Image (cartoon, rainbow, N blue to C red; front, side):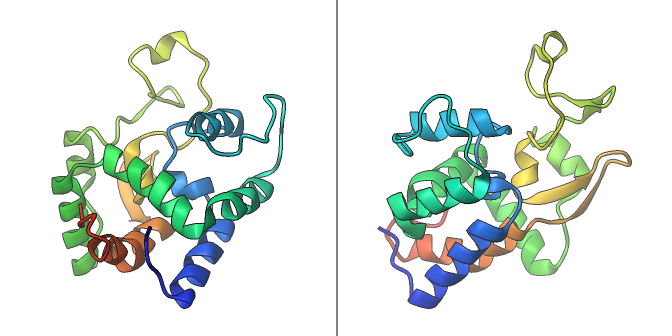
Length: 180
């Protein structure tokens, strides 16, 4: 289990319940129904029925009761981030963060972290043209950066980027899990 000071727990808990997007955009699904299904498939929120429609505040509260902030990070957020990004990508992001610059748009495209838009719909899946997909943040890059999609440039870091590099990553190194 991640060991944190009470201050770190409180800070991360407040960011979890107040930051948008939900769970810092680390989940694969980007609509509430899909996110609930994904969390239930991971073994969480089993008390929710298939027809449940709680708001995100309630889901966060229930996750914090069920897992605590340590469990949310250790069992949901960190595994999702480490499955989305290679060590080389995280290292590149960290170097950019430490130098006060954002990753280049070209780098995100080259690494397959941002696929772009086609006719006002973001390209989500190989068969994207056969589906009615909602627009939104689906590409992995949106976990760490905000992209101005009309002009195709990296606008800024997300709240999660700061938390990852300044709060979460140092905790990973202290648990034997190692920094990715």
